[in-house]
Image (cartoon, rainbow, N blue to C red; front, side, top):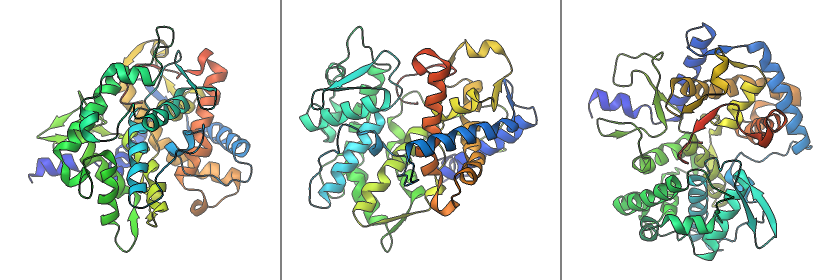
Length: 394
């Protein structure tokens, strides 16, 4: 491996996300990040709201990890009884559902025929994906995924002209590329079964030394296994960088110059795979080795509480690309601010760090607080910034 490849592959980790996120925040505090001003005095307000929402959602503070499993609110998914097939099936459901979990848009909702309840946003996407897998409309074998038609996904999500789903084509194409990647990498997706997303369960089980596995190792496998499925993302010297973007303020003297890794969906997926591994008897350690998620609920919390302030008022009404340096900086600073806010939230709740890792604050927590303040400030509860999404980032 060349030194350039080594520098680029170094971006495929949670540690790299955290390092460059905090660097971005420090530069912004020095006034060196164009488009943003940071007011850390307002961080107490964000922490106070997060603690308040956490107490309301979980009065006993018995908080599960932030994971896709919280969104299957229509009832626990049915999984096989026997291991390791149960683990593979849980991975299938989590992986497909998370990859379909980008922002749905304000006009979409899903009527669940089983419970006769209507769900929107992330919960709706979770329940819809669960029902599609249960019915067989969304198959979990790699060959079927590679041939997935957008019209079938639209039918599963009950998309209509008056109920559009943002990024539908992007979601379908993402799952097709997942199927193609699973077929191309049997070493990762078919080590003990036919090629399927759930084949990653067998790889992680084999890597769990003495029954223990650090959470960052889950992310590193996901970034290796899923890197090629992301369309229109940076690939430099053959290294697929995924959710990694350019910002001119972060300087390096190697091939990683100006690059800001965020890996939002991959980290959300890593959190969501912890429980299936633990169900199989594997102890997942170093959960705080993962970072907060660079998405619009957490990021919106900091904008709406005044921690992050756009220096140009027009930015709030403008339409932005995900790749815009203004958005890249916002997402990176969100990761760093979640780290800074966590001790303040713990103090307000009277809990120790060991009992309240970042994954519990996200669930309790910051994501719900971001959703609440958004609903108070904007009709429909959308994010404070308008971003063009292809359904594979947020």
